[in-house]
Every structure is written in structure tokens, then in C-alpha cells.
Length: 253
Image 1 (cartoon, one colour):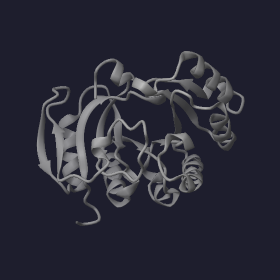
Image 2 (cartoon, helix red, strand yellow):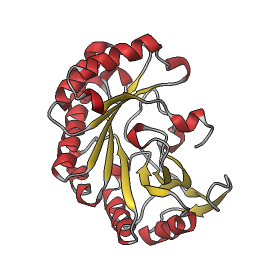
Image 3 (cartoon, one colour):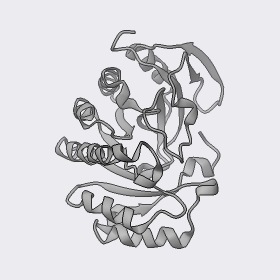
């Protein structure tokens, strides 16, 4: 496979359901393959590589056709053009994990910017080195801060994962990329975990989204309020919010 080609899982039009851009219309380009194994993952079907990519056409139809991987940036831009609609805010490159395919992501992001589309990268931030090769072509970066209790990786590997996630946000700030740190809150998430993570975010121009999990892992309202207070002791309260996954609430992808 050529380095500039990518393995994708799906391309579709929806709303951004997380963080400060909640409710904004985006086209989602979902990469296939992830290197982590979070206990709350809601896109587990895209952890592995994929032979085919599902592409929605037309936008908002919920109808999909199948195209074979790998895909060139040009082909993906063609599919993006077919999905453009009034009110489109940006292109979300998500996963899976986009940093596993940085050359393709950079080429795609460049192509989006050439046709006047802003780029929103959603990443677990496992490699600040790879993120650094992309930052200058991004408009928004949402980094999912993994708490140790998330079980995303082996416990001994977690400190290095956190270091890379924090460094990604520092790089984004230096490149003047609008930055979002997301922390998924599970039932029983300890205040000490949130406090330790927020201490690492002090001094950064970053919006912190505390995102409650759903289903059996859903935290109580009391837990969410307590953790919001903890985070606000270390960050600008105007930049801290509890935001659930809105797309799930309204029945969208």
C-alpha cells in the first residue's frame, strides 16, 4: 500500500456530538485501526484494519455504498465533495486512530484546506511525534486524555501514553490550533485521577470536555458535578464543561 493511501472504515455526514463544537455539521472520515483498547469504546468495529469502506450517499440519507480500501486522498476528497451540504462546518478525521496513518491524514487535510474546508482531528494522542507532523494543517484538535482506569493499555505503558497526549496539546497550542481535551467519565471515576490530569493541563489554552459514558458505565449526576468542581480548581471554569454525546441522544451516528 502506498504511504499516501489510507485504510478507512466509513465516510458520512452528521453532527459533531462531542465537545465545544457540539451540534455543528461535519463530514466524518473514519480511519480503520486503533492501537488502544478502551473499556468504553463505542466504535470497536473500527479497531482493526478493514478491506472496505462504507460511504454515505447522498448526505443525511443513511444509505451507504461499499468501496474497497486502500483509498487515495483524492478519492476521499471526491466523496467529501459529494457529501457537502449547507451549514457544513468542517471535516472530522476520526477513528479508529488517525495517527496510525499520518502521511495519508496530512495529505487529506491539505486537500481539504485547498478547497476551503476546515479540519478537525480526533485522536488518542499516543504519538506526539506523529501529531507534530500534522499540527500545521489542522484547525481543531480533540485529544482524548486516557485515565489509567480506562484500561486503554497495559498499566506500565500508561504514563508514556499520558505524556504524549499532553505533549500533543502543547504542540497544538504552539501552532495556534484550537485545542480540546476530552476525558470520558465512567461510574466510579476517582476525583484524584481528574485532578492529576488537570494539573498537567494547567497553562494550556485548551477546552476541557468531561464526557459521561453511557450504559452500565454511566456516572451519576453527583459524580459529574464533583468532578467538574475538581477540574475547575485547576483550569479556567469557562473552559470546562460536562458534555454528553449529543449525537446518541438524537439518534445519529
